[in-house]
Image (cartoon, rainbow, N blue to C red; front, side, top):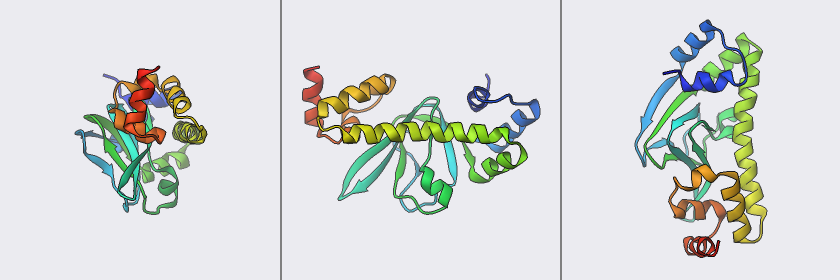
Length: 188
């Protein structure tokens, strides 16, 4: 079976056999059970995770309430990007919602790849664009005044994720109560 991260990177650049070998050597596949954490508040993010299969959520806790900010499913990256770049402790948790397989790579290997070949900067930019695109969607959803509009935008943008998440996680992401989401869905 082909390595999923090499397949993803190959969408952006040509990868030599030597580079493929390096990626396989320098990345780690990790299995997370539903409920396991990849990172917790206060830790310094030092890796980028690529979801092979499963679902991860990035959330923060405020006044004892969880606020989902980001979901990553098969084929997507997840990281607290600003804190990953700055080396500062995160305010987020990244948790598996279902059993999840990830490939992760440390910041050091990413920096090394950037240094050895300019084409890896393209990969880095594409990874950042993937993360930023999902964060931008969160901002757009938050700006919408009506919960029904937020719901419609979410299912339009991420139809594949909707069936894989408990409704209370989606409600948290949309900034509404689960009961309100149930009413919206019933009238949709």
